[in-house]
Image (cartoon, rainbow, N blue to C red):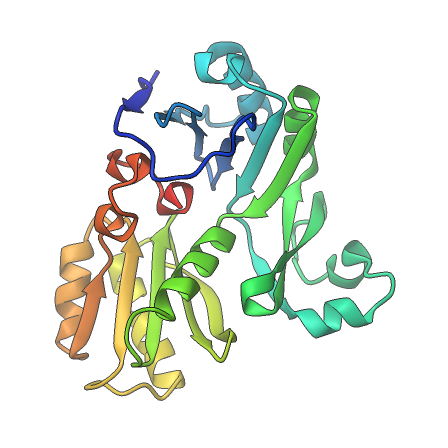
Length: 276
């Protein structure tokens, strides 16, 4: 079992007095990890070895029995899932008196009939993220916590990088988050999404193809516009080198510098969406 990493650097994250931070349960495609910021400024992160051939819900039940981090929990949790997501303009969401997400979007996600559909508002970008969460997985979390929030892993990434983009220069920017064998590619314009899509990118060649495809589709300038990469890839150096042979301005985001040396950003192997 992987050990618990703990960083004693004082936290940059503001924790309101008397409010216990939520434990975040992150569930990817065959992966699971746990993150807990503490009131004293320390953070704990624990990746969990998932047993193959067993459902993620069953793995999570086992984790609750095995992990000290989960035994020390409060009644507040956040379930963060890797799953396909549809972005809906907030005007469309607000115009409907009874926005039944299951009825409207159940058939949008093929092969995911056993998931509950969730709609989360992203106010900074005037959009609503619609995605699915496994019903059994959510039930396991609700069995252990009284207060449960559910989000897609991309939600904090979109919001953080949008806010960052408004502070750093005036050039047009395309962002790419590499995680869980995928690459999420997105761009912003006038407080809205200009582009957002997810591609399978198990191999770096796939990531290279989809990034250049999106770049061309958006008619971005090879000389003047910027591509920003964040996340983890076994061949990130190769990918950056290849991209620079086509585009002039390619950057990899350093989480430690970007997040002002926040404790979570200094833990090796942690997913970027958990650091924010």
